[in-house]
Length: 476
Image (cartoon, rainbow, N blue to C red; front, side, top):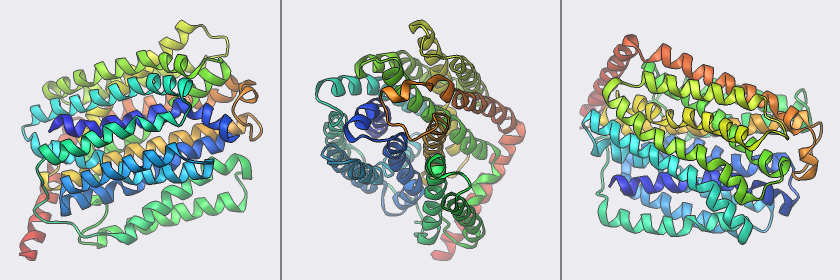
């Protein structure tokens, strides 16, 4: 069952890095500016971030296997549609369709894993294996993507999802039993609309700000809409019996820390992938396959670090893995600040390896802190909030790094030779943001994983469990 659930993480992780390697080829084929490449990534990330919590709650209510299978089918069909896209607009739309299916995979699979591995030590090891599969998918993504782009073109990067998706569908039907929460949560369409409005408005403002001007009515209006949606969400959600996001969860310091760590850590990761891919292909002039091989050592370190993090969590808790993650991201960011077009190969590899160590130790403690203190009946919702935080971080990373790059290049330059001029200086503020993200991960680890954090997690779990028992008794 763990292997089947990990297949969903594999294709989602593979899709992230494999598409990044294909971005320069997509840009040349469709004559796309930097903002167009940002939307190719962020259309997928924003839809996933918007729907993850809905998917987790729906799975708890109607059945986790049913929702998981539906997600696999939509994701596979969306991948096929992306491979046939006739233009950039169509590709962005099909990426959004693909994300609808992707939103039903990881949080639902994590809920299945959490309800299968109930003993804390075994669960920590299972989550470590989960993280290792993510590292493996990241490792294979650049190499497979580079080989496919070199041989059959960028459309081939979407074909790899088809056999994996079909295999996961068949295996799920054969081996994964149906499960659901004792009390289903009702839909929250208004809260869902507010989440979508907030995320889309913020991302649009960041991505299009360099083109329209940060003081333009369009950009300022988007930021006002995002702020209003957030305020309405915070006021509206506590009044519902079944909120889309149970704000009581955030009374737990480890849970709140996990959400913030996911946003900051994955913002650094997505921004790194976006910039380093353009650097290797458009600045250094490497073919897609060679560019993918540059990322292979980093991803291998991530794959090797994740199970070590799971074992350490089982023995000593999540603080030390998070401190290692923060230190690795910080050191990797500092090295990247000094990256130039003439940097030797060994220096680029050292930058990627240091950053990979940080990311490899990050995901397992995030997931463990998010789900370990919550009642099992709320595993899907808790896991989906953690996954949403990751995707929000991913979307913000691409939006922020792309906006910084476009603004410092002084114009809507398309990828290719034009992008290489001044890239190192234009990207340097983005690398400083990676440094800041690493420092933030370290600070959050120190602030949220001590004895006070454990006490707040226990109080929150008791509060959530007693509230759910009361609602179940009333329904009965």
